[in-house]
Image 1 (cartoon, rainbow, N blue to C red):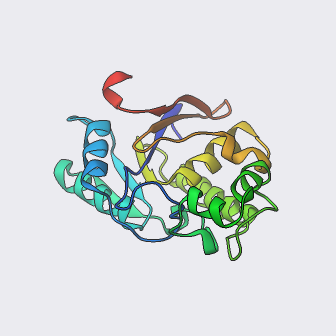
Image 2 (image 1 turned 90 degrees about the vertical axis):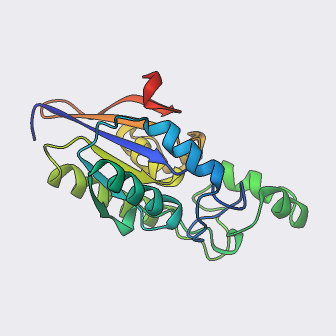
Amino acid sequence: MTDSRLVDLIRHGEPVGGHRYRGQTDDPLSDKGWRQMWSAVGEDPPWQHIVTSPLLRCGAFAQALSERHGIAMTQQPDFREVCFGVWEGHTAAALEAEEPGVVDRFYHDPVTSRPQGAEPLEAFVDRVITAWRALIEEDTKKHTLVVTHAGVIRAVVTHILRVPLSHLYRLSVPNAGITRIKLARTRPPSILFHGSPTLNRI
């Protein structure tokens, strides 16, 4: 690794169908979602490598960005979102109407109060951090963009800050929000900013 380098993580824009527990349901970006993403990255993006989740709401934009600016792109399946099991495709309001308090219990205790069939939180974080470690070990000289999901960004940020798994969902990640992480040879990773709506305001 050089003395320091940057990795930016961007959450996908709004998908078709709006806000719901989507997890690994493969909905594409809405028109609004595409606008959010192009606005966030600006006209002169700084990246030399794009790494993307394979899900459509990430991968389609990553491919378009790669082609528009001639930036190399690779997929990383382990940067896909956590699976929400039986909650996939449902809104919080619908879940609460069926079982009052179920959503609050999840956010207070996401480790043990998980939806039926959901990916265990520890297993999810383990796969994300394994992929993260491989990325920072292999992509040593590049300013890299990771196009991914709120859960993945939460996993990386809380790993860097050594936050307990039980507090994962206390971190808000907006659509098309950018998080920048500085990696240095002699210091721990540092978060330079989180959730920025556009590089142009940084």
